[in-house]
Image 1 (cartoon, rainbow, N blue to C red):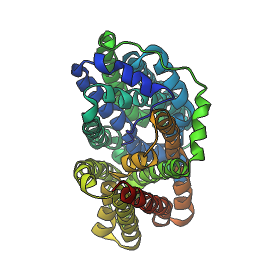
Image 2: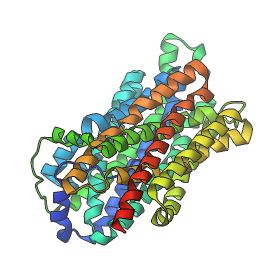
Image 3: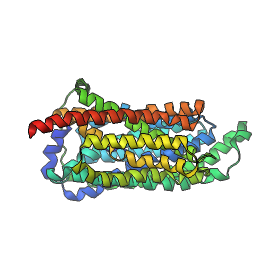
Image 4: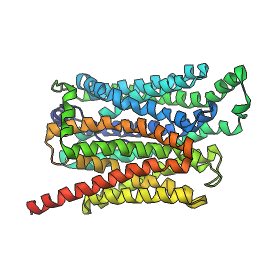
Length: 437
């Protein structure tokens, strides 16, 4: 899913200093981190329909799940990066995994309370751990090998991220959504009966996240045992807010805005998938069946990353980005104006178009920046991931007022802006290429 470098001010210097001492055997641990935080993030897509049904929420209310989750990127990213600068990569990763575990365990009291806000709190704590792990994983994989192969390592690591977003939603659909298909109608219950029903049905969510907590505890222990294999190199201390001065550069500002819009669009489509595919005029699936279709959305992104890596070596990145944005808009239009299999599979195929967008926007936004400026831009772009907290609830409110088909206009508008950035970047690169020639 979201997996580009989240470097803070000075972390580029940390990576360079640790380069020679980085044992290559650690790569497997870092690939596992990519798998974990990608999969945990995509679980939201199956948690949303469960909580929507249990608490009889509107789409706008249910998509507050994404606000609670992606809001952590806005609040926690800079403090997390400062913490990593003090304790080092591997200790930071272990702390992040333990924070994720704590968030998972908070689902237990949330279920006992049978109150939606407590689930949002648990998701925020879980996402805070995800943010910390992501702040570690991207720059760390850059240190584990030769500088000339860094792009190949990042691409390979992102494949593990996409693998997580493909596998865990399927498992989550089986564990979380399956029981809902056999439950009683929530709308018929009131008072104590309703609270008791919510506690019982929340048990499916609790069991899934409790099992995940056990896995995270083992992962944290495994990473902690490796903590001595990398030196803790202190980063230069700067006011982290100075990084936002980089937004004075139009290319970086445009790119950061597109990251905000891209993440919001990707998450909005994923969040609405189960409800959309369940419609009688779409695939007419049960909630559980629709949940098992979510991995096709994220799996398309995984396939697209492998194919896109080759295409980007031969074609202008701006042109590829623009083409992917046009394709995504076309698929959303097709899904919103057709019915049956065409409607459903067109929406799932948007995941394939998403595949190259984040890394391409990121690289184009940071193009021609020096090391410090690139680190500043990366930190700001990580904060821009908060688009996943803002735009999905907006799409949900549109769905409540005008229907799910109308809600597709929200991500379509986001892709239109990304199309403009792709064309802008292509136009800026061509004169530079002619001058270099």
